[in-house]
Every structure is written in C-alpha cells, then in structure tokens.
Image (tube, rainbow, N blue to C red; front, side):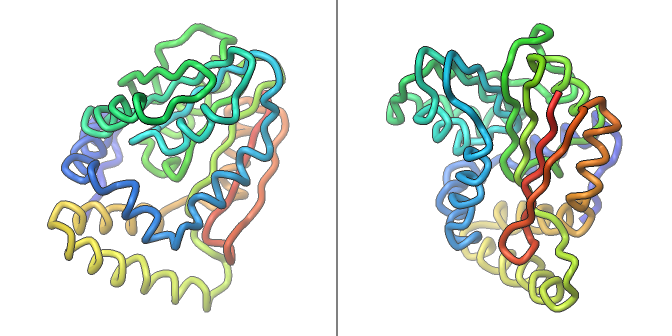
Length: 240
C-alpha cells in the first residue's frame, strides 16, 4: 500500500482509511496492543499537571479514548477539545459524550492539525495518542501546536516507533505485517486495509530522537522522551 505524501492527498487518504472501522476501533485497539495502550496513555497523563482550570487540545482524537480519560482527570472547571479529521470517528466520539460524564467540558471539532482553528496562547497542553505518524506535515502541526499553547505549555505524544533492537524489530515486524492484518481480516476487509496502512506508517515512523529534534525545529525550548514496552512505543514531550 502506497501512502500519499502531499498534504491534501494524505489528509483525504487518512480520512478514508479510518472510515468503516470506527465501531470496532476501541475494542480492537485494546486487543492488538494487549491492553498496553491504557498503560501508555497513563504514562503520558503522569507528565501533566491538572490543577487549576486546565485547557487541553487532544489532536487526532479518533473515538475519544484519550479525550475521555483526560476528562476524568481534569478538575476545577477545565475543558478539553478533541480534534480529528474523520467524521466517522467523531460521530462515535460525540455519542460517547452521553455515557462518559466527566467533571470538565468536552467538545469535538473536525479539522486538521496543520491548520488549527484556535486563537494563539489558549491551551496548557496538546496531546496526541498513537497518531503522530498520521500527519501529512508534521512540522506544520508542531508549529500550530506551539502557537496555540500557553507560555510553558507542553506538547505530549505517545506513539509507535521502530524499535532499535534488531531481534525485537524482527518479531515486531512479523506481528504488525502478518498477525495484525490477519486478525483484522477476520473482522472485515476494511480493518485489514487499515491495519496494513498502520503497519506501513510504523515502518516509516520517526525515532524518539527524531521527533524530539522536530519539536526543537518547530520552536519548542525543551524536550523529554521515554521509550516503553521494549522500545516499540515512545513518549515524547516538548515545552513551549
């Protein structure tokens, strides 16, 4: 599967690739990650301070997995906005609002991360859960995140990366290119297509060091990174 590289083409491609898989997305994600996705998100939340009226932007929010977990952590009248390109994913996220009551305001917006429809200096945090690889113009998205962050605000991403250990990479490569598509094919042809796409994005994904450098290139002043689960996932953070 060839993944488009131009911004408009890839934006359309990503919107289509996550259509017709939204209903099973949460359950299959837990199964495919052996429920480690929950651990990875919690590790990201541990880096955040939820005191005061916190405003958070959750980019590429999908069905709202990160968004709603954050909504339970935020107190004192804070708010969180989930942003995604896929109308199918957002329809599921909006339906979840009635079953995941939290103590903060939750809203969803359809837009692209490279052109954020928000004012400068608005959010304390920008988060991305397992989706940094999906952006067509990563540098533009990082610059937009920097623009809308408060002074001393943080950008936080937890995402799949290519592990450095050769043995781990060989096992991981077999898992994402053979095991996962086979599981997806049992569910539907749409899921097999989507999982092949995800495997290819992981194959071409940036390392934690490369993502940290991209944050610095975008204008962030400080970065922190942490590898998890044998190096197949990395948490990378940048401070404005």
